Length: 225
Ligand code: 5RP
Image (cartoon, rainbow, N blue to C red; front, side, top):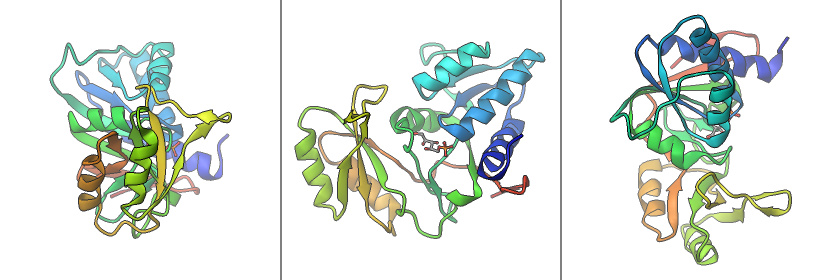
C-alpha cells in the first residue's frame, strides 16, 4: 500500500489515464509517475480497451511490451491523440522542466506530435519559478566539452550526468549535461538560446506543451490544473 510521495505519484498517474478513449493513439511517458499511468493503461487494455501506444523511452517500451499494450511506430501514424508523461518541475503557466530520467528528447518528439499532453506530477513538482531543478540538456558526444562551455556561457553551472561512475548515455546515444540556472524567468528565450548551440540535441524546457497538469497529493487526492 503506497503512502506519501509514492501515493501522490500513483493517484496522479492513474487519474491521467482517464483522458484516454477507445481508438486513441497514446504517448507513454517515462519515470516513476508515468510508470503508474502505464500500469493503469495495461490493466485497461487487458480489460478490453482498444488503443495503440508509442513509448518515450526504451524503459517504457519494455514495460508496455510486458503489459501487452499494443505498440505502434511513427511509420504508421502522423499524430498522437494523447501523451501522458511526468515532469520534474511545473510552474503556474504549465511550463515544464523534464529530463530527470534522461528521456527528454523522445519525450519532446512525442509531446510535439500529440494533440494533448497530460502531465502527471506529485505535489512537490509545483514551483513558482522554474530552475531549482537543474535543467537537463541532451548533447551529442562529439565535442561535448565545447558544448558544455557554450552552455556555461549562458550563465549556468554545468555537470555531465553520470551513472555508475561513467557518463550517462541516453537511449539516443547522447550525453546529458545538467545545468543549474537556479531561476529561469524567461523559459521561451532560454529554450531558443540553448537549442541554437551546435551539439545540443534538445533541452528539457517544455514551453507551451502541457494542456493539463494532474497534481497528486500525499493525502491521496488529485487536482487538475
Ligand atoms: C524523464 C522525465 C520524467 O517525466 C521526470 O523525470 C519525472 O519523473 P518522476 O515521475 O519519476 O518524478 O522527464 O525524462
